[in-house]
Length: 467
Image (cartoon, rainbow, N blue to C red; front, side, top):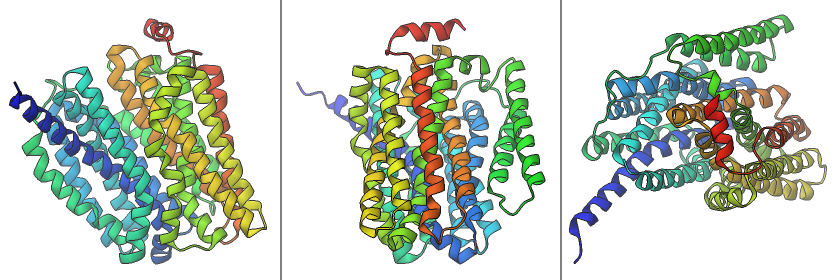
């Protein structure tokens, strides 16, 4: 006999998954869509290379810092309430981004967007865990949300380029409005509230120290016009606040990110690999539209479509990654994936240095496709490796760590590549950031070879638990 109640439950679980997945779509779409519009934003608001990088880094910096607070506040006051509050902030900030008349206003609105995104993301992830108490259901929900995230990453540059070309770059931000309104309507009606009595620790000192450390480092990398003394002072301040953050977390009775857990070599390998992908792939995406415009003389609209070569693998390849990591083991798998990204960056260096327009076009297309395949293999698997290696009681902390390292690495890598780009008017100038991206990817190969266990076994997990 057909069980009508099971059909209703299935339909409701699907609806919950897609509603929460819409939050993930928004956060990632707003990063990748802006990438293609950067030339138009820079032209309208008078940004130089450093200013253009700050448009993305302001978002990532605020998101990174707010992640440390959002989990504790969501636990304390309610995960649904946190998601809805983040959605409101994200909506208002998106409107402010679209209406910005100068650079400082846009950067301030982008930082506000980052804060909203942190609460939106943390609330959505926590609500998935509450809505699906059974492990199998939860895994399917996260898998579906991962696919939705892949759509945002894959189609963001293309849709952003089309919106910017047809209506202007401001509509990339205004396009968030209907999605935010949909979330505001659907979440209270579809998802039940959950919270943890007492909540987790709220760590304002840690938030300030981590944010200042990243901010000083980014400022040092992007301030081309500053004296060496000022930039050196920025770097010293960044190192000092980073050390202060680690010491503060080490001494805390209830740390947000426990250094003892993440000091294990495999976890250091995860963090290094996550950062490596930011250098070798994600930061490269930020500068590819400028390179396509200068080197191949294409429009913003065409650049957005061309970037599909680098982003579509995020939709098509991750399923293969899950199969290969089981067959090859972590060490071999991540060495190969990072090596593929490095090879793609080499092709982009060749494209930048080539005087032949035909060879430049072929090398560019091949390079974009190659870095896309490598990143699509490695990126989804690193989160699961972090969860597998962390002690069960620290699973939430491990998940937060991967999000923070991704955002922090993204912000730093964008600034670092931008620091090597002297001008956007000459095609060979792009060779320098692509070389740096290549070395970043090679660092991922070395980290996998030295720090990852050879096989996916429970042995290493047990060692980490004993630390």
